[in-house]
Image (tube, rainbow, N blue to C red; front, side):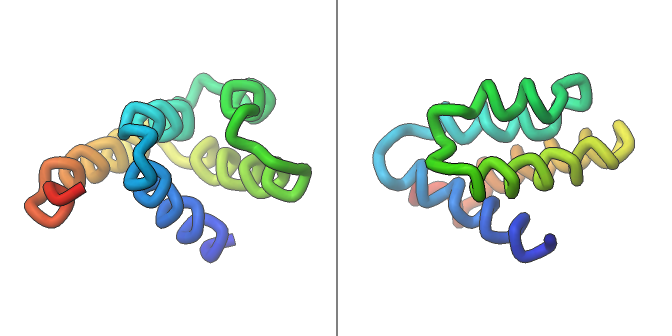
Length: 93
């Protein structure tokens, strides 16, 4: 499961780098850490990014990992993402 999370998080910056813009990444992260968004709604919102059933199953597990976290952890994750976006290493993207 940890490998799936790592792969998903590493794929997000590559998607941004491919020229689509980081608004898509911010949208996905916002939906991922929203505790009020169910797995089914999450899948519906990201349907255009899901090529098949295996990816959908992985995203359901991915979302469930975040649903299992408390609000403090989710807020801290949001702060982490913002810190990464504002870092010097990320400035090249």
